[in-house]
Image (cartoon, rainbow, N blue to C red; front, side, top):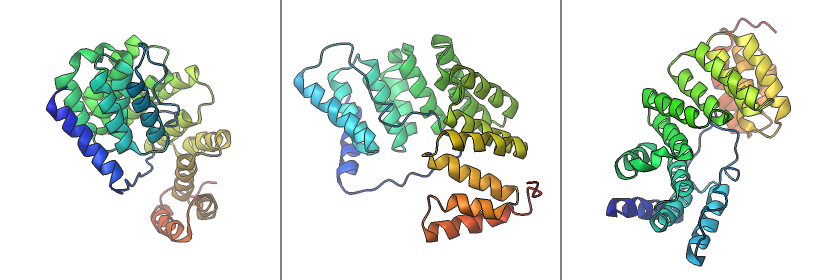
Length: 272
């Protein structure tokens, strides 16, 4: 492996073990419904020696614990040892994106491993890293290519929807979410994305209805609840916004959020 790749891994491992805490900010959209555990690499296609198996177990554990710097470093080290394994590369790209280094891993993949982009999972993770880098047009092209490879993968349709939302192409985005829901009915995270797309397009009542259903389907997803609290505030219903936000936030965080929500009190018209 090129020296630059080893430097990436070394820097990540240093960050991950030096006590630096990454602050992860919840965003309106989520790219998949996976937990980090569900995203972990499955059984390898080729046998692993003991050292490689140890790296894989440690990488999975770090990703499950949301220690994305360490996970990326470990998957990177493992990819050095298995440079033809697309699942390991896909996991490395994903965790680099999670750790805020999407542009770096996009550049690495495009210049050092372009031949691996023929793999559908690598292409999908690369597309999401492109989106995280602010390269929406390239991300959309890559996702469309990924869709051609895996037409029945709902995650691709959902990611296409998110990309189209960033381009303010809301009607097309909602069609993409509808395709994802046909493949994965009652998927709360896709419904969350669909609702926020509707809200962005000015269809607030529909957005609240969809997000209420999503919150009922997945009562453990903080992102969905806080998005719904925001939509209630935009609709002028501060009491419901407060009650929902209080389920996940401490007093200081709650007051901060409520002061933000109050900016929207006069926006939504209060149709409840």
